[in-house]
Length: 179
Image 1: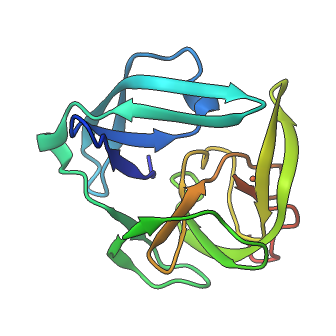
Image 2 (image 1 turned 90 degrees about the vertical axis):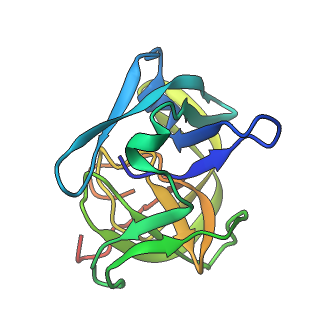
C-alpha cells in the first residue's frame, strides 16, 4: 500500500490516507507489505467517503512501532524518476493545470510523472459519480488507487481511478505510450 500519512493536530493520532472506494464498508484492520516482503498491520478505517463530494478515506495507524510512518514517499526508478527510498514530503497543496505531478503506485509497481491535463472533472465509477477530480498524463493501473500524488516535495492528493488504459484524483486520460 502506497499512500500519504498525516497526524491529528489536536490528539497527535497518526492516520494514513487512501481512496474511499477501497475502504467502502470495510472497517477491519488493513495491512501493508514492505519491500522486504514482511507484512505489517496499519489499522482500521477511521472514516471514509465515496460520493459526489469526494473519494477518500483515512486509516487510523495503530501499529506505529511496527513500521514507523514518516513524511516521505518511496520513489522507484521509472521513465522520469530515479530511486529515492525517502523522498521527503514537506507540505501539501492543490494541483494546477499544466503542472508536473508524480505518483508511486503499489500495483503498477513503479513511480511515474506526467502533467495535470484537466481539473474539475466528473467521473462515474462503480456506479458512484465523483466531482472535482483532476486528470493527468502519468502511468497508473487498477489497484493503484490511494497512491500518493506529489511533486517538488509537495503532496497534491491521491490517485483514485484507473481506466483500462490509464489513470484520475488525478486520472490519466490518454496514457503515455510507455505505460
